Amino acid sequence: MGTPVSSIRNLGPAVEAALARAGVPDAETLREIGAHEAYARMLRAGTKAHFIGYYVIHMALQGRPWNDCRGKEKEALRLRFDALCAEIAGVAALSGIEAVLDEIGVVPRERLQGG
Image 1: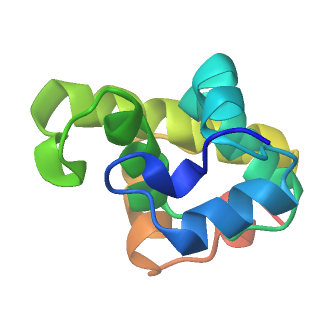
Image 2: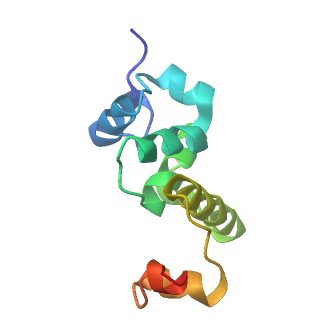
């Protein structure tokens, strides 16, 4: 048995349980596969996509406070997160004003994609 995921600063029991459901049983496995792949597995296992959850895992694996993600780094992670969500959902990633409208819930994604 490996080290609990919750032993990593800022990752608690809820993240640990979600990762376990996704086949990431311990901190060693999480460190080996990285935050992006771990989150992809969580999404495939049914975890609802949430950007903060995505970047919290990234920050935790770097030993940084969860709220340390800012500026260009946060923007780059947002692009990776959106692409990952689109890949998992099997839809094209939105960009520009469409992404903003979807993010704030003004226009449903389906309408933006012509559905």
